[in-house]
Every structure is written in C-alpha cells, then in structure tokens.
Image 1: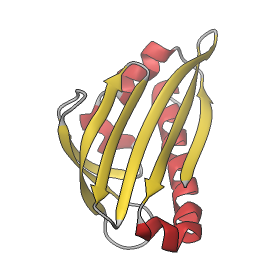
Image 2: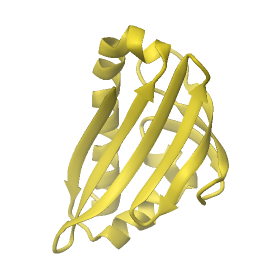
Image 3: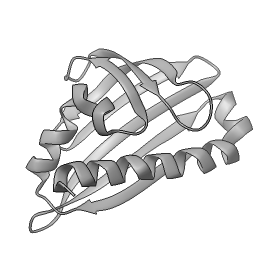
Length: 140
C-alpha cells in the first residue's frame, strides 16, 4: 500500500534541496508537518507531528533513513499495528527543473483495515505539501 504524488518545481535540485533540507523550517510552510525535532542526518532519531484531516496532530517517533541531496526519508512503526516509510525525492527534470516525489509505503494491520480512508485523506494532503514546497522554492 502506497501513496505517492509528484510535481515539477521550476528550480534546480540544489535550490529545492536548500529548502527541503532545512527541516526546522518545515512547520512554517508544510501544511502536514506541524512540528519536527530531528538532527538532519541519516540514522538520527526524530519526533514528527503530522496533521492530516480532522482531529489532533499525530506525533510519532521515526528514524531518518536517508538524508542526502536526492532523498529525505524516515521509518516509523507501532509493531504489528502500523509501519510507514515516508520519503521526499528530488530528481533533475530538465534545465532548471526538479521532479519532486513525495510518498509513503505502509504495512501492518491498521492500513489493511482502513486503506481506502487513509488513501483518500493522504493523497490530497501530500499533494498540498508538494504545492507548498513549490511555492516556497519558486517564491510564488
């Protein structure tokens, strides 16, 4: 089970990376991440608060899997109930353009039982993150 959204940002990968890698600023522009406490390096433990849909933000402990100019990703889980691999990927899409891919792969009992609802809620929310990053980078 996976949710994935993509868009093209009119800036080179380095300019997009400069914004995306400043994880402490995410709550200022990212409509899903309301709080993040992490060291910006692979292997670091982090706490992420996510607000998707109605209700309070969900705060989850995660471990950063990758943190380099091509990807930021993390893994989080409640054993037996839920697991997720959340990723943000940057690829050169053309001269002064970057393809931004944002998604998450899920496992566990909870996603199996609630997949249609989760997908319907997460797809537009992740799309809003992509839109917000594009606006932040392009200055529009």
